[in-house]
Every structure is written in C-alpha cells, then in structure tokens.
Length: 266
Length: 313
Image (tube, rainbow over all chains, first blue to last red; front, side, top):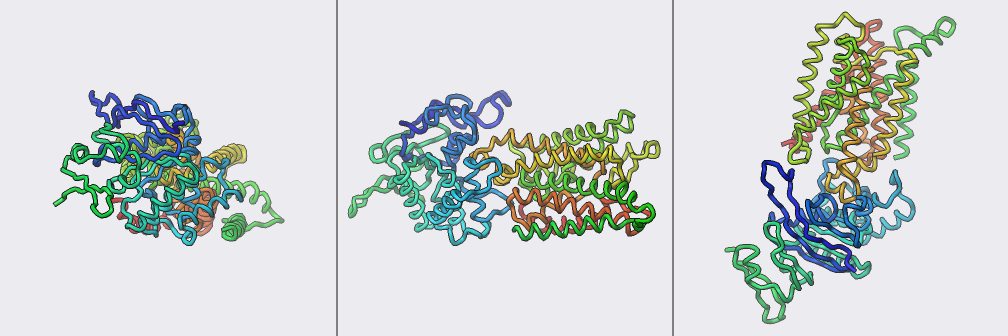
C-alpha cells in the first residue's frame, strides 16, 4: 500500500498567466512512497526539491496533476487531517517571537487537539517521551533562540514527531550539523522508521549519506526528475556529472569495499 | 504563571477602583455622588477599558500575523483609515460613523497589504513601510477635512480624532458598543492557538494544519472591524497597540493563548489609567488620552526599534 502517490504534478510560482509566460518550477513529477519506505531526493540548488516538499505537505497546491495520500487526493482533505499524517521538518525556525523548547514542540499537537489546545495528561506523557527521545528534556524550558543550530534542528524534528505522522518530510536534516549530531539524527529517524513503520522523504545534499542511508534516490534538475532508482544499482559517475554538471567519481574503498562519491572541487 | 495573572488582576481591580474614585469632583454620597459615579464615571471607565482592550488585542494579533514586532493598528494606518471613514461620513452629513469607520479601516488595511505583497507573500519590512506611508497620507486628508469642518459639529474636534479622547456616552450608545467589542474580542481569542502557529511562518502554519489564507483573511478583517469600533468611539490613540502586546510578551511569553487575553487586559488598564490621569491632573481641563499614552509609548517604541533594528535591515 502506498502512503503517498504523486502523479504528474506541475507547479509554477506566481500567477499562471502573469506576463504572458509560464515558468514552471516543477514539471511532470511522479513517484510513489510505500508505507515504511525511505526516499532520498538529491539535486543541485534551485532544482525544485524544497518546492516539492511544500507541495507534498499541502503548503502549496500543484497547478496540474494530483497527490494522493492513502489513496485520497490531497486537495480533498483538510489541512488538519493532512497534518495528522504528514509532518514537515523545515531547515530553520523562522519566528521573531521566541518560544521555549517545550512550547515549540507542543505546536505539533495542534492538529490533534481540541479548539483551544490545552494539553491533557495523555499529551504530557507523549511530550515527555518525545523530548527524551530527541534528547531535549534537560533544555525544555530554554528559549529556542538561545539554542545551537543542531539543537534547534532537533526541536523541529521533535515538533514533527508530536504530530505523530505516518510520513516525515525532511529538508536537509543533517545540514549544518557536526558529524556526531548527523549520525544521531539519522539513527533516530531510522529507529522511528522501524518502530512506527514511518515513511520518510528526505532532501539531501550529502550524497555519501544518501548512498549509505537511502535505498532509493530521486535526482532532480531544473524542476524535473532526472533519474530515480535503487541507489546501489543506478548511481554512476555519468549520472552524477549529468546532475551537477561537474565531474564526479563513484569510488570503492579497497579496504572495506564501501562505495563513496568524490567530487574534485580544486 | 497563574500567580502573575492573579496578581495583575488584583492590581487591575485596584486601578478600576482608583479610576472610579478619581475625577474633577470628589464623590459625595450625600449630594450627587452616586449619580456622578453611575452616570459619568462608570460608563467612562468601561469605555476606556474596552477601547484599550480592543487596540491592544488588535496590535498583538497583527504582530503575530505579520511576524513583525512593530505592527500596530496606528502605525499600519488602520486607525487613521477608520477615523477618515467616520469623519468623512460626519462631514458629508451621512453619519453612520461605525460602519463607515469599519469600512475605512478595511480599505486602508487592504491597500497596505496590497502594497506589501511580493509574489503572494507579505513582506515583513514592506508592511510597516507601506503602513506608515498610508497612515501619513490618510491622516493628512483627515486633518484637512477636520480643519475645514471643525466647529460645525461637536464630535469633529481635531483633538478627538487625532489624539483620542474619551467622552462620557449614554448607556444607550455604550451598551451596544461594549457588547459588540466583547463578542469581537472573544472571537479573536478563539484564534489564539492558530496565531501561535502563524507566528512561526506561513509555511509552518500550513504544514501544521492551518488553512493559512482563510485564517489570515478572517483575522485581518476582524482586526480592521475592531479598530473601526475603537476609533469611532475614541479617536486614534497611538501606541497602545504597540506597547501593550510587548509588555504582555515580556511578562507572559509568546503563547498567544495567554498573551492575547492578557494584552487585552493590560491595554484596558493602560487606557483607563491614561484617561483618569488625563481628566484629573489639569482638571477641569482634560488632556487627550493619546497624549498620555504617547508620552509613555514613544520612549518604549524607541527601545524596541533599537533592539530590533538588525532584523529590519
């Protein structure tokens, strides 16, 4: 059973007929995510990856084509219902008013609470579990604006977990994180994926991470799907060069037999 | 948190009693004390409180909605739009000040939002710039009209509209105003959880289950209507919508389920006290309420401006 099916979606920013020409940001994108699946999306800056994530969580609507969540078109479901199933983890907190860690995580309960959103005992338990799971319990009363980049990233992940979603959309979950925190976040997501059969779509710039982590990768370029397939089978030097317009090498470590990607930057 | 709220409520009750007790004449129960209290001071205090609550809640809502600490019905030109609407009606002899003020408020807010849109997103910086420009323009027209017609009609006094001053209204007018305002405020408080999410940015709000466009229009419309209400009865009071929400945020944090009602409460207290000071220090002369709130508000505005100036660049 596919939790999410994307069928031939097109999208463009601005009005569709403004200035007489349509500039499509996304064209003809189709893919499916099975329940419990993990898909990595890679591609150069401006290839439409983040726009795609926004479309998938209903923040933007496609101009054509449709997105099916559990077989139902996304535009026929209320935003609250979408938020119960799909959670987006953005790259940064974008507020001028600073909430405490606990308040920020509690925003994730919004789609599931009654009209004024006061927490009940059930939510307090869930909240505690989530804060411990994401290693935020000790800093739950601190202001998010006083946290480091990595800590803020964990807060955003915790907020998404509070939504108790079936599908997690991650916008570069490891960007700006040191190697240890990168590892911790990836391991945490893997754990949740196994425990709760969570499906994950993640945008990644770190191709080596994508290679190790994602069984399937979709490459995007200029708003189109360039290639999609099983990571181990279809990732070649030629595809990397086609995606990023610079020569990239698929190498194999002779000692461990692990594959890795190398771009010559200098 | 509960302690702070209880403490403030107690202080508030004290302030209400003081405001009822203070005035140009001392209350004498053997003479006309009770009629002065119930016919003059109670309506006046009620009115001041209502107007303060309206302006402060609208300010708090706009700040969260536009994610801009400087948003306020006065700076965004909504107040002057409302005043212009009401004054135009009076000058042309049509009257209906409340609907015309609401119409004026909606029209100016619509213009400001239209001017500050970039590719369907409302720019945080532009909304203030556009607001100040629209405010200057509308208050210039307002002053022009007032200077031409003043004297012909009692309520067209320049002081009343430009600096805000309270008048004692008969209960016949007061009760519908208070009831309308209370209903409007309760409806606004109902959106507090949504405001918490909207303050995190439109994309986040949408991904957490808020229909952003619809909610934004409801809130914007509501803010314009409530401003229209406040301005018709009281003229433009600057800075209440700006200072009070920030004071509430400093005391209670950024959870709007607490901050929004507490803004209303603090706003009510501020305007009530400003009005009491205004009518008692130089009595029998009255200082416009706006003068007192601006004397307290302008320095506060400068502090915020200094603290937040990096975000504006």
